[in-house]
Every structure is written in C-alpha cells, then in structure tokens.
Image (cartoon, rainbow, N blue to C red; front, side, top):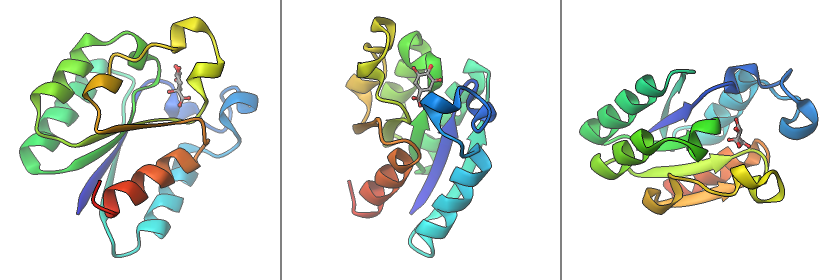
Length: 141
Ligand code: DQA
C-alpha cells in the first residue's frame, strides 16, 4: 500500500501558524508520527506545496502510479476547481482531511470543492485527522 500525504498552502507553517486553531505540532512532527503509526503496513511519501499546480501534478501522478492520497488542500479546498478535476480525472483514491473543524468556522470554509469527489472526508481532529485517514486506507477503505 503506497500512500502520499499531500499538503497544500500554508501547511508548511504548522506549529507557528495560528496554534490556537491548528495546534503546536509541525508538519514534520505529523509526518514522523504517521511513519511510526504505519510501521510496515504502508509505504508513505510526503509532499507539501504552496502552489496549486504542483498539487494537480501530484494527484495526476498518484492516479497513474496507484498511490492513495491523504490530502489537506488548505484554503484551495474552498476555491479550486482544478484540484477537484484532478481528483475526479485521476484514478487516485483521495481522502480529504482537515485539522480544524471547518464547519465550526467562517462560512467560506463550509464549502469544499473536493468533498464530492473524495473517497471520504475527515475533519476536525487535529493531527489525528491524518491518523484516521491512514487507518481507513490500511483497513481497505
Ligand atoms: C485547513 C482548513 C482550511 O480552511 C484552511 O484554509 C487551512 C487548513 C485545516 O486543515 O483545518 O489552510 O485545511
């Protein structure tokens, strides 16, 4: 089982970015925890980009290569038809995750362009959102 943990804009700033909303863990912390949790149950790879096109390319390549994706698209979640099309058009199985409960926040975070084409959505559990997505993929979701 090959899994890409794909993070979009501003998620490189985790740990210092609005810690009251997103917590104290850095993205490197979250990635290290995922590797430890996966053990030999999955092969993980990681990409973070602030650039929408890089995320499109990563989704296309994941579909081509049979790699499942745990995807936090950050604010592009709420704006990007290109990312939605990339998910819909690739064969990649994509689980959408968010650290914060976007439904408890500003109205503009309540809509996701990605949710209708995602395999599933996990929202609001902090770093555990990634853990739950990992366990779902390992369980065969
Ligand atoms: C986020 C929620 C988004 O609304 C926001 O733009 C982010 C992070 C989350 O993980 O809670 O950058 O995706």
